[in-house]
Length: 469
Image 1: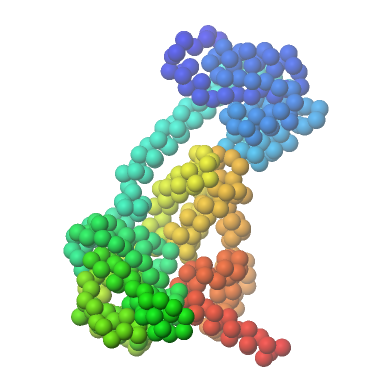
Image 2 (image 1 turned 180 degrees about the horizontal axis):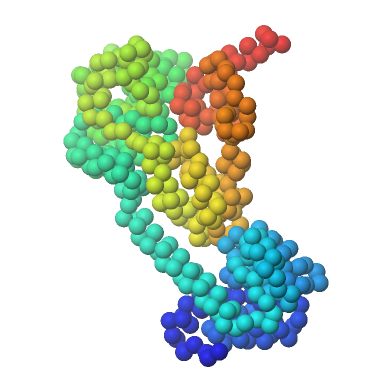
């Protein structure tokens, strides 16, 4: 077969596809390696399967041309070990005893091709050229993805689905006006990112932006955190401190999970919005502040108002401008670009290089329900980036709950049976806790309830168990 012209496009592409030749016959290894080198493929050879596996592990080759019959390890065993190390490696098996059944079995097990000895040079070069073109296209697609990612990133928010584009358009319009805003959406959907984007694009972007999680503090501490306190106002108040509203005067305060606040705290917040006044705990002095409130909740505040758990007047003060952040289930087309974004982020964090996910790992992510939304997806990619040893993240690198998803009743797994709502609620909370490995903070975020509510449930559940025992 004639050699490719020097510096031709074909040869340039071939230089991006290093090949490892594995055969127990040293002469055959030398001949094949030399032939591939002349064709423009970077080639190395060995007679030891362990050395070839080492090359795969080190990322020194993208293709392995392996003999089926070797003394210490047959081709199928080598194929299995190679794919365990790097699911993206292309293994071409070579045999002196070709059969259609053997070829089908090889492909089924993950081989890229199955060739007969003596090797047909034209078929081999054609197979390698196809792999080189695929590898080049993938590199180009990754470059385009990186460019697309930079174009789609908006103040730290990533998305291209219609739901996200509509939301981002609303953010741009609202951000120009210095007014209070209510952000609604499920837990983990990125409400704080939206709040930060609102502030960064606002007329007071150079002023301070303060954050308070209303569900993380009891009422007395929350009041002190927001309004400040005087020395000696309560036990432990050893000095006078300003609150977040005073600290961020002229800027904005983000009140996360405002639906968790008590009626007493809601009354104080309403007074602040109406009069632009604050009063430190333990102080008679009233101070004027000019601060923008950006509130967020995963609750339906309209239902909370109807149930008497949230003040109607405060709700209308906050919700004159409302932004709804869609959950990940409402924008599945954003999952690939979010995965790319988080892979890039954690590649830099952990000093690793990731090309992407294997197809089977991508399918697992696309079929997951994502109850924890973008935060859950980020946690999955972060943990996978820590454990992954290859440039492609595979199913084995994903958390166990994604690899072995829970079986839903009525689908041929668990037998469905009618249960009281309290029992279903208890089972669901227990499953979420198990999924979070007992992390109650994360479980409460996924469940969309405050930590206090979760602790109360666990205490009541434990008391019920003791009563029954």
